[in-house]
Length: 145
Image (cartoon, rainbow, N blue to C red; front, side, top):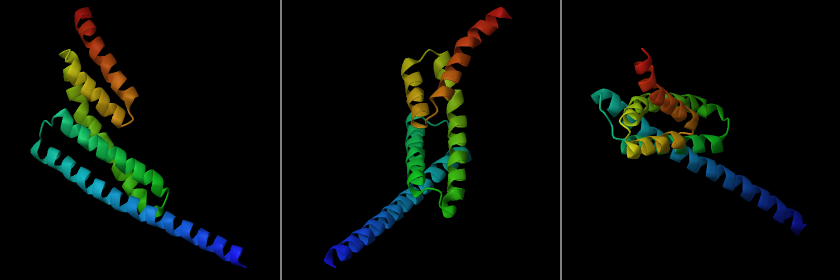
């Protein structure tokens, strides 16, 4: 009867809502991906020395892309996108690491904090701590030689 019809409508409504959410996440992922890819290509093309604020914007876009991919699950059409996100993260870390080392070596607390935030945004705190340890050990190594 009527209760069964309402239950079926509710189930269909739930499926439509889930599909709409996936479409919205897909659009957000596409927008973030284009912006981040463009930013990375610009940095590589001009060999720029980006400010940490620029890198943070890129890290936030990357974080948003990972969230969207998580919502979209393991859909086959997004497998390549997951690989692209991993590649962009590696490129961003590669750009950030020497700059983080420089700020640590110069004992620039504000710069070091900014790079700590960048690594945290990427979910890579352990890698930042490794950079901190390397920077702390560098003066000792030069003294021992």
